[in-house]
Image (cartoon, rainbow, N blue to C red; front, top):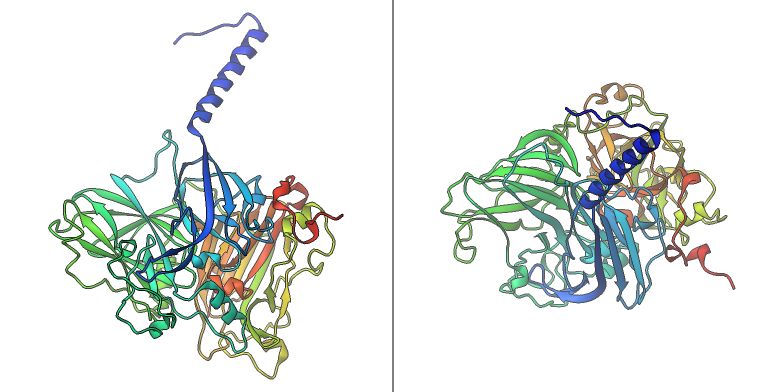
Length: 587
């Protein structure tokens, strides 16, 4: 070992500065700036063999995949070529620390990008994992406006599990009816639900049965062209070599369907959820809800003379949609000549919610890789999720408030101190006047406080650094003996899942069962029928963040709230995010 002595402090400080400059440069080399030029436009596509009008980025459905390394800066120049409507893109799972104005939520972080305009998103991918992007205005996600984001660790870091190669699949559901027909039905009296999807897609490909009569299974009566031999709807192929272990990244962008993923003949070892490490869990099949992502490991150790099905089936709803399929191809087998000889793989019964709840409770944080959960919270919200009516229209409501987007983005309203942008009346932390609300009963049609709700857009406001518990409580819908799965997603954050429960949440006793030792972190959690979930997060990301059901029609119908935090620390807003509502130029 060589010791150096410095004769003067100035020389020492100079060399020390050089050291940190070099270290910073090395770190900078690992990060990169990636530029993308995207154009959103209508096109015709046949993802399930039925040709229909879709929203596409650069003509692709799913849209372009972003491959990045943790710490990279992503710059997307997005041009809107939709002739009659605005557009935004949400970067699902990106925390947008310091850039809340690029979260990509219409009327929350920005004004919509008008037809003919170009808007530039620029943000840092702050965590390795499996994520995605999608439209966040109206129901544009349902029209095909989505794609994957895959973020790798820097070369200097290593995952806490080993594998030989990796693949990814994006799961979605698909309708032949346009989103405009769907939206009109949701707004109509009498109410017209979107119905079950015609197809389930794996990596944007599915197989609708072209022999079905128009109108069956909800198919469009307009006789849309269906061509089973169209290469656009050929099975997606996952190639593997015998004996190797693979990391399969799975993400769900579905608009309605909860899914169960099966890899025929292969067990799955779950190692990450929403980009967060967990203790490995071995499962035969995997429940995945809209807005969630997983990394699973599997070994290609089966008979290599044949290929196998990867399949997805509907959970939580009567499955009127056939299994979505892809092919696990054992090389050098041909996918053209050797489709799997077996039947499509099955899943647990669609209404076996005990199975789903048990699987959700398996996930525990991997020690040493995440910050410990705070042991107490400074504020608790109990959000009662109900189906109600407003002026005869069926809506979803939270604590009797059905959310509507205001004309002025919340972020601009707070930063620019705009009065009258939204109601100054704070939303309720607890279900109003309903301490004895029966979650199993139909709303009393003779009690206006049960059957009717109100529109609202007031945000919950938190102090910077405040620790918040949120309990989401499920209840009966307006239909007898019916409660649904709702996957809730929080923008700008990951949260700890403290626990799940059946029935009505008991604020006195149920917190005693909270997992404060090793709860998992994620950004989207399922609330099961007639049950509750408890989450905890730290309001440490100045911005305005939606917390909402990730089912497209449900958020459209009002199932969501807005969280604002650290509003005195909001950054300056790019002028391109403004120009609507009260931010319009006044002449």
